[in-house]
Amino acid sequence: ELILAVETSCDETSVAVIRGGKHILSNIVSSQIDTHKRFGGVVPEIASRKHVESITLIMEQALSEAGVTFRDLSAIAVTQGPGLVGALLVGIVAAKSLSMALGLPLIGTHHIAGHIYANELVAEMQYPCLALVASGGHTELVLMESEGVFQILGRTRDDAVGEAYDKVARTLNFPYPGGPYIDKLAQGAEEEITMPRAWLEPDSYDFSFSGLKSAVLAAINSAKMKGEPLREAALARGFQASVIDVLVTKALRAVRETGAKQLLLCGGVAANGGLRAALTARCEEAGIPLLIPPLKLCTDNAAMIGAAAHLKWTRGEFTPLDMKAEPGLSLEEWSVRS
Ligand code: ATP
Ligand code: MG
Ligand code: FE
Image (cartoon, rainbow, N blue to C red; front, side):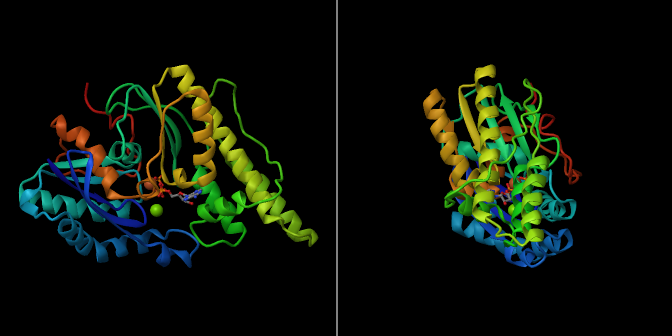
């Protein structure tokens, strides 16, 4: 089957055509980063307007690159949540119109399920598996006992990893989004300023990054006040080392304790070079099969939405046409019916 998927949850307008939940015929991503950069973050109103401006063109591009027409499609998938409500709405209105005009089933899709199923586009997911989701708005350990069944073992109690990266980067005057800048700085650093690690309770799979973020910001501000050199690289390395240590240690413990057969890394922060390298090394050591999508599929894109929607397609679980944008959509509730 051919699924046309639409993703507009944040600041990327994306449309993809996916065959059989696995093969990407096209995956057009138009990023608004340049627009939001000067504000130091995503401005919701502007994001919605930009989505409206570009969605039609992106859709045409996706179809033409895939070499298919509307008549060839089997279903329309769209990100229903989580995300910015106004941004989600643009994709949802477009998807509903298509679904209605073409008489095709509509599949409201969970954005984080999409990040996880990005892995299915490049490899074979094997169950039970454990996903470490690290993105701009989420940091979670998700257990999947079987296909399409999501159970959240732990999540951040405050900042998401990507959010902490972006805040630290902003204080260092890097452009938005700052994750890649900190990553580069950290990997090239010759020294490291040691930063705290938030392990929480010994048996907890939850995360906390606001204390770490505050420690880094305090170090930056105190150097600024004393007129001392900033040692940006050493700070970035200390920050990144703390993030990686906690993420990798908890993810590996969860794999051990759940008996998962595979570990999946996903979300925008999966683009982090330091995290990819550390996780790869530790998994190799421990004999744990690890999947990480290529960079293009880690950050927001519609192909991953099509891959997740395929789960619902094969089970005939479609979404009513009166579906609404759900900024707080629950991943566990989005699981396939048993
Ligand atoms: P969510 O998926 O939780 O709704 P989002 O869609 O905004 O949030 P993504 O697009 O998945 O988030 O990821 C964007 C985040 O990834 C940003 O916070 C960005 O700084 C971070 N990021 C991207 N590349 C890197 C990197 N190399 N190192 C660290 N962080 C990175
Ligand atoms: Mg984005
Ligand atoms: Fe995302």
